[in-house]
Structures are given as structure tokens and as C-alpha cells.
Length: 455
Image 1 (cartoon, one colour):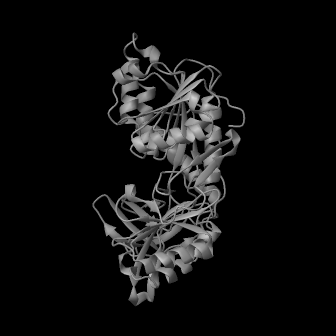
Image 2: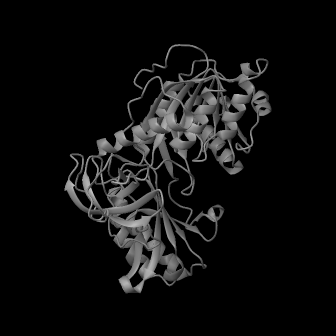
Image 3: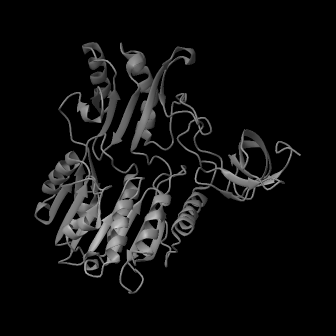
């Protein structure tokens, strides 16, 4: 019997939010749109020796967690993958993905599972990159995310995960670009929403004439946005006009305000970021008089709040320009006396570098998707040398955007490194997507498990 006729029972979801089942021959089948517990027939799109991939052709038994997607573009637009799954079940799926990765890839089991960090499921996406295409066959200019598994731009006039005022701009942006002289040479618009202003970064492949600049200014005045222009790479981004407020986001628990450029990396979900920073610092549990190192510090999202608690903080990042602007943020918040920043390649660390930086009581580690392999390997190497191991911190809080690289690094920290993973939990930074954020706590000395008030 072919899978188009066979009824398959969906066993789980994978990290791409595909249902996972096995056919009668035992072959793994990945099924877009299917949820655990459902019985489905599959329309197969790809066949390999060990697995097949397809989509739901018919549904006989429906999951109790299946819901009606809120966005009418879901299924065509590739921005979301899980709107058909209840948001609570999405969080549980991400927590299981984290636990599975830690065990299967790192052979690490957290001593305590943290309650997942959750927040608004809609209107949360304060950062986005929208593609722009002039497609006369579809009626003109399209502005939005790519279609699912396609380079085509989805024909959308709203988005439920963007803030409401940004979603409302989509049809207005279509009309604006349609009327510009350079409409065929404008491939993307980046959106960055700050505390006081929304910035739009227009990528343009040819210089803009005065008529097009005038159209942008009129749009900005009419809709309360701020235009930035990007003629080439990210370093060329500049304001169309210098007037207007700076982009900022706030961490009110710590009295910190962070200035940023619209192409800087900042978390897309401001409410979740505030909760994440608060929990990370409670788990870090910095005591007066202690020294802390923040590895991969970026603009200081964790570094500045840590400096409100610690005696001294060293923030280390790979970009000199980020380091300069991090120091500017430190000065603007009156924290420069406790802070020092350094630019260096964090993917080429060795144990001698950790010794040179000296002992810190605690570390905060917040790497990109590639993880912090060099740092974790250097810790493992130092742990084998009793004469040098005393530079290692008692506690590490690791914030991750990739459970696979977190698990790899956790294996190094826990097995040769001598740490225990005392706590770990998921962070639903990107509701309705398969993206898994998380944090984990590592303790070096045989002490009590981490218990942080409010964590």
C-alpha cells in the first residue's frame, strides 16, 4: 500500500515542526502540517532510501491541540510554521526539543527543569526583514516574507506576528514602492521597532533620486516612522534625515536603556527579552564585590544589567564597532566605572586566554547559533590542569538560540569540564515558529542545585 493510501499515526514533531511517523515498512516519514496523535494520509514530495517527506493529504483523527491559524496567510507565507498548534503545546514541544538535544547530543540531564518563559503570542516581532519584489503579473509590488520553501515573496497585506502598526504598514509600503522611480532596485526593507520610534531600513541597489527621497520623507511624516538607507553592506546604513529620536529599548527591572542601530542584533521580542534578562541574572545570582565575564556580549543586553549588581564586569565581543557602542551605552547609563569591553575573536579561544583574563566568579555566555565550542573546549582543557583550573567560575549561565550547539557545549562543560547542569529551560522567543531559545545553568562545585527566587 502506498503512503497516499496508508493511514499513518503521527508520533512527534521534529525541530522543523513537521510531524514524524513511520510507514508499514518502518521508514520515517516527515509530514508538514501534521500533529502528534493524528492519523493522516500523506502526499509524498521527496523520497530517499531512509526517509520520505510530504504533506497532509487527508486527516482522519485530529489532535486536540490543533487550532485555527489566526493569520489568513499561514501555509503560504514561510514566516510561521506552528500556528495550527496551540501555543501551550508549542512551548512544550520546544522544551522537549531542548531536553532531547541535551541528552542525545551532550549526554547531559538537567537536575531541574525551569518553567518555560512565555509571553505574547501575537504582535511580538519587533525585528523583521521584509522582501520587496515588483511583480507586474501579481498586480505590482509585493512586500512581505518569502513563501514557504520558496524564493518568491508572499502576497500578503497583513501579518499577525508583527506589531499591529507595522502590519498596517504593509499595504501602504506596497503603494509607496510602486510609485518610486527605483521600484525594481529595492530588494528589502528591515523593520526595527524601538521604544519611541519604528525604523525602516531600505536596501537600494542604485542611488535614490530626490523625487524618491521626497516620497520617503512624505511617508515618514504621514506614518510616524524613521527611514534609514542601505546602499551596500550593513556598515553603509545611515539615516535619511538626522532629525528624530534614537532607537532604544528598555530593561526597566534594571533601570537600563539601550541605544541601537536598526541593523544591530537585538532580540525580536522585547517582552520576552526583559523576562529572559531578569531570569538569567537571578540564576547568575551575582553577589556584591564579585567579578563577572560576559562572553559574546553584543550591545550589552546582559552586560549592563549585570553591572548594576557586580563590582566589575568584562564584556567580550567580536566586533570593535559593537564594543564602542556598548561602552557608549554604559556611559549613558552611568555604569562605565564598573565595565570594561574588549573586542576579540571568540571562536579562537584557548585555555591560555582564560588564564590571561583571570578568575571571574561567574560567567554569562550568549553565543550565536554556532555556539561557544572554543570557550567550552578551553574550559575542558583547563579543568584537567589543577594548577590552572582555579580561574574557572563557580557558575555559568548559558543563553542559547540553538539547542544542538548548546548540547554539544554542555557535554564539554559537564564531562571533561567537571560542571553539573543544575537547571535548564526553554524560552518561547519566537511563537509559531520552530525556533528554540533556551538557557542552562552550570555549577562547578558540588553544591546545592540552583534555586533562584522568581526563576
